Length: 67
Image (cartoon, rainbow, N blue to C red; front, side):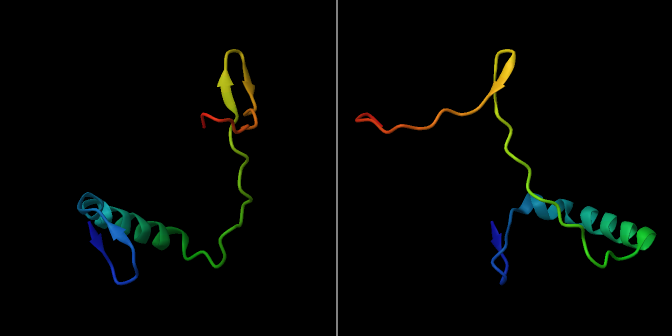
């Protein structure tokens, strides 16, 4: 694990693909130009649990002696 001065952690396998990501980024930037302001999207609601033919909401957690 490598840690940069900014505090970001890199795994050596991640660094192997870094040049590919960088070249793709530069190709897209050359084709479409820089984005002045990225669109802000609201966070999506979490997906409910799938049980059988329908999706159900989580039951509220009630503490007891065991847990």
